[in-house]
Image (cartoon, rainbow, N blue to C red):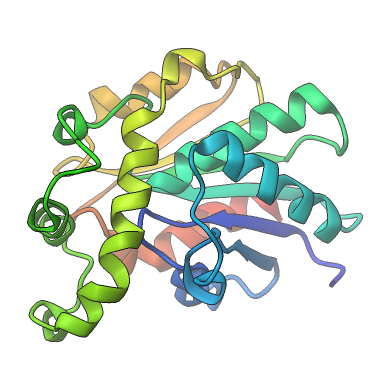
Length: 232
């Protein structure tokens, strides 16, 4: 544990905590604490969550145990935005630690994704693979790698099911904590991202970038600059 401001990070569907390593290098004046989901990355042998309530039950105590005396922020990318919002609601209701100084959300609008509207957990793996490839986050060398898909298809399927089941209408969150929202118009249009204002009623700024769902890979330095200005 350091004496720096802290950034607790929540990754995308199918992702591992190491996703944030690149951006952490852009902002060394903060302590980056990526939260690993059960069943992912270094916790791949653990059972998957059944819903975001189970995710919050697991990750909130890890946040509380890692807290230092400095201000902190929550940063969610894609599915991680849902995780961050759910956990923020818990923090505000339970009062076991002070609220974050700011919340950073990226690449996920506050409602169910249209392409998951008809999701069925029993669908063939090809459907899961096709959706994952469409987002552009899989290195080309792995596209036809059977070993890769054997390992990661169950992870993507479990995460998609959580997102599919999540009801934003039941998200118990309304706060004046400042929010910084990152998006790409091609991926999550501003008109949809602005619906986060339902939950963040104070200062809520939007930052547009170019690229696909993983625009962070091209724009991590600019995004780190937003974190720096807000958190430090």
